[in-house]
Amino acid sequence: MKIINPATEELIQEIASSTEQSLDQSFKELSNGQRHWKLTSLASRIEKLAKFSDLLAEEAEQLAYDLSSEMGKPLAQAKNEINGARIRIAWMLKNADKYLSNEVMTDTEGLQEIIVHEPLGVVCNISAWNYPFLVGVNVFIPALLAGNTVMYKPSEYATLTGLHIQRLLYAARIPENCFKVAIGAKDVGEYLLNLPFNGYFFTGSYATGKYIYEKVAKKMVVCQCELGGKDPLYIADDIHDIEKVAAATADGAFYNNGQSCCAVERIYVHEKIANAYIDAFVKEVKSWKIGNPFEEGVYMGPLSRAEQISLLENQISDAVEKGATILSGGKRIAGKGYYFEPTVLTNVSHDMLVMKEESFGPVIGISVVKDDEEAIEKMNDTAFGLTAGVYASDEERARNILNKMNSGTGYWNCCDRVSAPLPWSGRKHSGIGSTLSYVGLRAFTQPKALHLKR
Image (cartoon, rainbow, N blue to C red; front, top):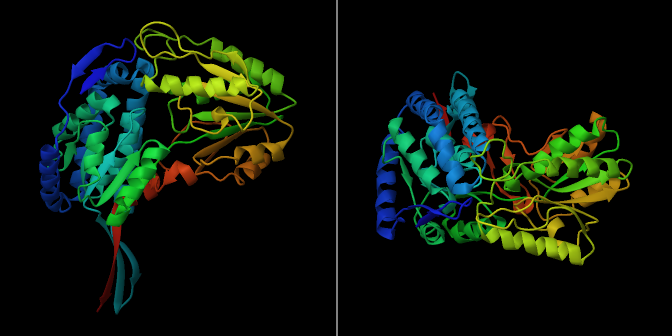
């Protein structure tokens, strides 16, 4: 398998893909390892995973460099991702004992009733390339904490990072028969679906998630899918600092080149402030430096995948044909690398692909609405349901709007953020199941009820 630098289109490295034989062997080792790992004390598991987090900090420079090299995000953003992963790990380690230990529900002279949170067994984690550290630790950290062993398949666009994760887990004294990496593309993922795992945890697109969910349904095992979104944002007319809001929401749309499941993908702005907001938004976008991820001050690097360019071009072409106006960007940047101009479209409508289908790139459509009711109607007009946000000065007004959103997450005066204490979940085509929070810790367990009569 060839690892290509998306900034230069040069070959970084060639790595052998996993074979069916090697995957079979890895699964057998994980099965054997799980019998011992589940008997390892939670305190010992916490200690080892704390060491893993320390190693992430110690090697942050090299880890960030390799991450930027293979998927194209600016170096500063790669470092931010590693720091963010460590913050999530810290929360999980701090709260693991509270949420994974046995719970005594009844304790009388003649009866004790207990809930035991047992591990699922051997779980498969098919992960994503856009935030490989962050979406990875959402799964394999709580899985290991709960006593499971893990087959981790990094995306083929984040292979080097996946191998680093394995190396550092081993260095932290996680047994080698408790964590294995499956290297490869679609064919390797397909083979993993045939192995008898006790749970599947996938992060990626709706189409792939739907396929995986249907394929493993007959096994009747846990299958969680963290999928994409077409996340809406409403800018109310009572905001005080339009330029500040425009800058924050532009970042919410274009951070990591818009390659975030919770990136803002649709903006609705109240007609009273629409012109001022759009002008400030475009000004902010045009101020960014685009270029090599290792250059100082670069905000946007290349797209991670060459094939995403044609998808964006098709969405933009479709929008323009149906009456949209391009205020900024609109095309690929000539030369080596998968660079694409940050694109702002207005006069958009819901019959356009750019307002219906996930872009997962630096493209945003901005629509003008007359009031809150129209904003609510349009924000909910989607097959997805990951996040929805409101910028407004009046909290009661904002909460009323968020209460009417059919989404797993709601934001007031913020966007494009994930927090370890809160569950991360999607509705409709944005997925099923939750990671993070206590819900995400227990997602890797199965409850056993003990009725103990004295």
